[in-house]
Image 1 (cartoon, protein in one colour):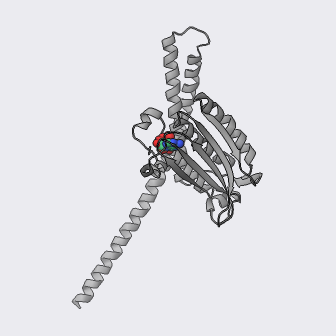
Image 2 (tube, rainbow, N blue to C red):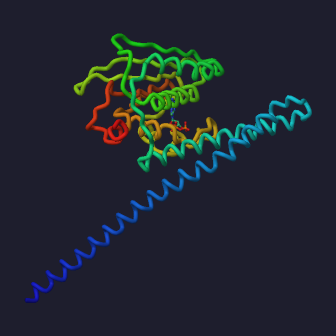
Image 3 (cartoon, rainbow, N blue to C red):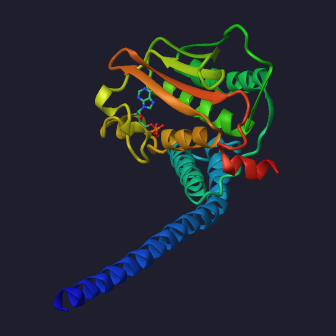
Length: 277
Ligand code: ADP
């Protein structure tokens, strides 16, 4: 009798604990959604005034009317640069919160590889030239003309990897090598971004993909940046059915490779599927 009562009591306690856990899970889920929605709304509201601030600071920095002192022009240029960094941060936070709340739009279409190449060339060439880096793009044999993916997102990932490559390289070269890679799950396309820059110690090679993480705490002051670019890139690659790999040697350089499927598998990526239909 006693034992039976005890067991019943235990069962009731367990049931209660289970209910409590379920309630907490729902609360956490809700809080996380509110956080993402709040960030998305805030980011949007912050961008509008910041954009006008940027335009006006640029006008002042241009000093077309030649009525500002060199010091005033310098201040205006600093306001513009800081504003620009802030906008970059806000855009990154907005992207990340969209991804976290499952609201990142993915638009799949047939995307021409040569279009990706010319976009990249136009965007990165000036950046590399500014730093005196040799920049090349090469295309391997057997590449298809088109792949099924989201053009804007692929360009965002590649631009991000290449701007990092330029940022963390002071001498030598930066390159984008596009090739076809066979795998047991069908061929993939690989966009390999190589640099001859500072490299990343092996212990840090995975954490750089986490939000707000930089390989070296002191580099943020030296190189600037938010530490969000790689985590956004990794999430975007996932949404496109792909992934990013890193190989790096300290002091010698890094290679970040984006692997993408040639076609979107309908079952493997429900988010993509939903948007296609
Ligand atoms: P950010 O560049 O804004 O700091 P990222 O998420 O793009 O943020 O990169 C995170 C960190 O990874 C960088 O701060 C840097 O320490 C390291 N990193 C990324 N790309 C490279 C690279 N090509 N060479 C060396 N370090 C890199």
